[in-house]
Amino acid sequence: MEFLVKSLRPETLKTATLVVNVAEGRKLGTAAKALDDLSGGAISTLLKRGDIAGKPGQTLLLHSLPGLKAERVLLVGSGKDELSDRQFRKLVASVHGVLKGLAGSDAVLALGELQVKGRDAYGKARLLVETLADGGYVFDQFKSKKAEPKALKKLTLVVEKAELADVERGSLHARAIATGMAYTRDLGNLPPNICHPSYLAEEAKALGKAHKNLKVEILDEKKLKELGAGAFLAVAQGSDQPPRMIVLQYNGGKKGEKPFALVGKGITFDTGGISIKPSAGMDEMKYDMGGAASVFGTLRAVLELQLPINLVCLLACAENMPSGGATRPGDIVTTMSGQTVEILNTDAEGRLVLCDTLTYAERFKPQSVIDIATLTGACIVALGSNVSGLMGNDDALVQQLLSAGQRADDRAWQLPLFDEYQEQLDSPFADIANIGGPKAGTITAGCFLSRFTKSYKWAHLDIAGTAWISGGKDKGATGRPVPLLTQYLLDQVK
Image (cartoon, rainbow, N blue to C red):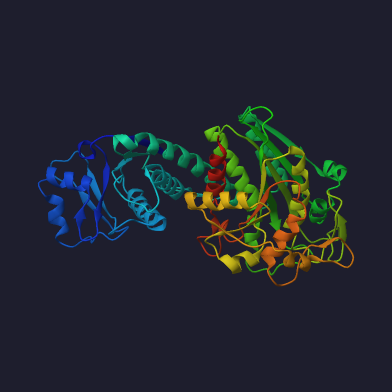
């Protein structure tokens, strides 16, 4: 969909649908008032019938109003006072729901006067365009009957002249983020018989061919053995699909400038291994590569915007399967760092591929490292599906991510990494156990990863609850936390 930003009088525009707001109590917004005056009071007359009260997200479609060039006028309720982010997103989603059901190929949105708590013109534009673009997402690659082509091709945002530059910038960033989210959702929604580690490696190579400032390296089993990645290889040894560590280096900043690093868990299917999962809902374990998919999506947004930073993306890709060759509970492996791990549960595999990948990240001397993983079901118990879990060894980095999540409306919540939790990982036979018992599972998983991140500033995002919607016909990847990660990187631009 094409998005345009213009500073014009909306009542003069010729369009299939013109969208204006009505506040609670049937109070016309500025744009709606201008339309009402031009149409000889037609809108206020209709409002008196009580068809729309002005509550946030309510809509009323009007056809062929006298004196207007617009074929239709869509009234949308905007409430009494400032809107929250959630209310604003719901309002925009309601507008999109009406527009996509109409035959018109274009629409004009004159909603610049809406007040959203804590948001300026740039912030409102980011939310609006991202919500509209993401709302048009369709995944029908494997449907014999494809979705009907979208009639709506162009959306124009009408704003005050003083806000033009900010809204254009917000729209640009939102479109890049939405592109990254769609890419993340596509990868997550692919079936695991297609989207395996080698497939993701080919995706990375294709990105490298399309962008000259992106260097791609694929580390195969032989290279991983040479590096001593015993934990990584242990996860993959039960599968016929070979593991891959994917290394992508984006050079958009100054030569020699230290990069930022994103590390993504890419378990393309997780049966749990010998510690096998229950069969109910196991199909959703194709989403266990949501961390790697979100790194791909964030990189896609960065490439679209050509941000002036250096960025390293490391994707730890493997498939966790049970077989005669699979890792057993009780096995002890040696990690790339030299630390030994007693594997008490083969379903705690994400931390095993991540720990070696986090060790590999040291060679890039990064300014910061953020790992992203659908790591623990305990995170869903603790935080549900609304916010991601966040831990780290650097308070400033954690605060930057919390702030980025607020601004992107893709929030995280900090959990502690106290030393008392580290003791739960003690093993009588190895340096560390890969699980810490039934208590505080999300935190002990973070404690495990922290053992491999002592040489740099590090944060961990557990996205088990936010990376996908579970169950039923609406299940699917969400594209999170691409908005949060992209906002963090936008904040790093000097």
